[in-house]
Image (cartoon, rainbow, N blue to C red; front, side, top):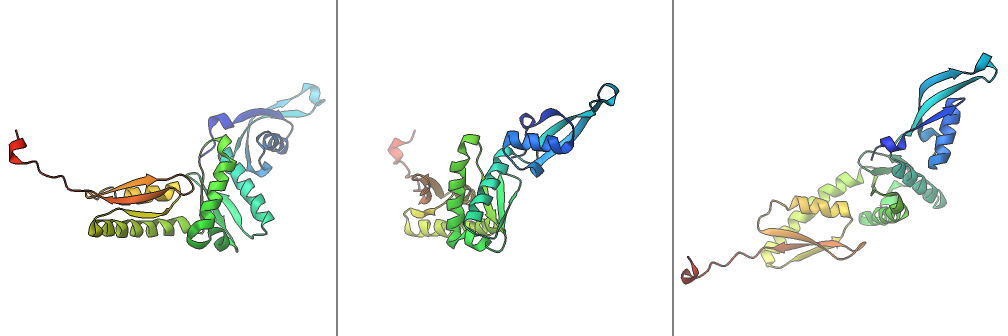
Length: 215
C-alpha cells in the first residue's frame, strides 16, 4: 500500500523539522518517515514574530506498513537479531541482514509465524501485510509451483485427493494459480488459520448417460 490522500495533512509551522516532529507524533511513526512539502511562506507583522510555513506532510509509505515495520524492528531488537526491515511495494516488508536465515526458519516456518503474528498486531489498522527475506518469496514461489505440479500428477495417478502442507494465504494462491489450467484437477483450501491448507483433487470423468436417457 502507498500513502493515501487521507494520510496527507496541512500544517502551519516555523520549520520543516517541526512539521516532521508534529506529523510523526500524530501518526506514531519515525520523523524521518515523514515527507514535508512547502506550500506557502508567510511573514508576520514587521517581522516581529518571525515567519511561518504552510506545509503539506505525508508518510513515506502506508501508515500500516510503517507501524508494522517498527513493530518488527522492536521485536527483533528484543530477540537480539541483526536484521533490518524495509517497506517494499505491494504490502511487503523485506527482512535482510546477518540473521535473516534465522527469521526465515526451516521451510519458512518462522517467517510464516511472524507474518501471522504481525497481521494480528495490525489488524485494527486494516489491510494485510506479507513478509519476505532476501528473496525467499521468489524462491518459495518456484518451489510451490513444482510442488503443485507434483501433487497434481500424484492425484491423477492414484485417483484420490492429495493434501498439501499448511500454507500462508499468498502461498495457497500460488498453488491455485499454478493448477488453474489443469482441466482434470481442482484445488480446494480447507481448515482454519494457521493450519489452512490445499487439497488437490482429481476430477472424476462424467459418466455418459445410457442411450434411452438421451433426448
